[in-house]
Image 1 (cartoon, rainbow, N blue to C red):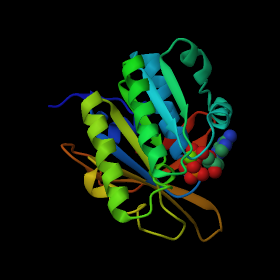
Image 2 (cartoon, protein in one colour):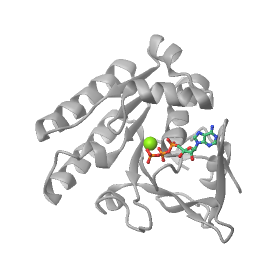
Image 3 (spheres, protein in one colour):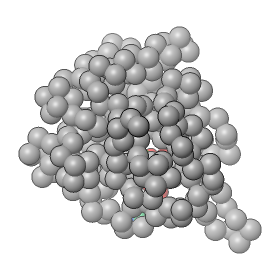
Amino acid sequence: MSERISTCNEQLDTLLDGGFLRNSMILLAGNPGAGKTILSSNFIYEGALNFDEPGVYACFAETRKRLIQDMKKFGIDFEPLIRRRKVEVLDLSIGSETEVQSALNQIFESITTLRAKRLVVDSIAAMAMGLETEYEKRHLIRLLYRLILKTGCTTIAITDIPWNSEKIGESIEEFVADGIVMMEHNYNNEGNLTRRLRITKMRGTNHSKKTHSYTINAEGLDIEI
Ligand SMILES: Nc1ncnc2c1ncn2[C@@H]1O[C@H](COP(=O)(O)OP(=O)(O)OP(=O)(O)O)[C@@H](O)[C@H]1O
Ligand SMILES: [Mg+2]
């Protein structure tokens, strides 16, 4: 069996038969506010803290400062790990194609410096913002995938699913990715927000085929097995 890497969420590890495959690229696709950033931050934080696997969090969708501040509420304190050079949070906002290349270079440099084993890209849409054609976006995804294979990092690539849509991002990423975890929400008959998680693709893994309800609390995501 190929080597697994913990997602740092015990329940998700169970649903994935132990975790992600090492050196794979996983799409974490979800509605706005589904908990994508919380789950991914914990993957980096606990990965560094509990498994001594340094990690890089590439922030395209929000600022570094905001991410660090927001995650403290979930017991995720990046700052000591940043000081110990076990974690890097990169502030990367994109305006043009040249900046995309520079962002990829910065990610590569941080991974090399930290000898990172884990990477999060938050999000693919924000990263591809300056790109106009489908060809350019496809090219970017392939460059990212190549970077991941080259560095050996296990990567979560966050992808947005707009409200009331079944479509993942640009619909390019899903074919390249080794796995897809979907996080969606609805309102039930009582008008309450309900959340559900599904694993729709995971190469080489006997994963759960069910729909799992989950909630978000101060400890992060609590997924029903
Ligand atoms: N203290 C809390 N307790 C429970 N749930 C919370 C708490 N704080 C935030 N949340 C929930 O977590 C959500 C934010 O999680 P997160 O930032 O990980 O989502 P996201 O999927 O990354 O969103 P976006 O698409 O905007 O980037 C909020 O929309 C809210 O529903
Ligand atoms: Mg987010």
